[in-house]
Image (cartoon, rainbow, N blue to C red; front, side, top):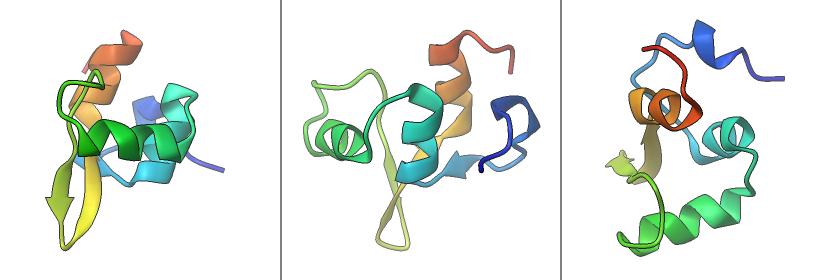
Amino acid sequence: MYPSIHEIRQTHVDTEQAAHYLLRRPQTLRAWACSADKGPLRAVRINGRLGWPVSELKRLLGVPA
């Protein structure tokens, strides 16, 4: 469904895709976004939607950038 994290060339991915890579539910990531001290990474707002930094996803997963 989604490409491998190694193949991503974008700087940010949406919540559903980030949840897929982190093996979490999208609701979990949305909760992280609502409370800065809850989650291991922070989202940014892009046109009113949450964007999750691919570099931070790779760092959390131990994938070389």
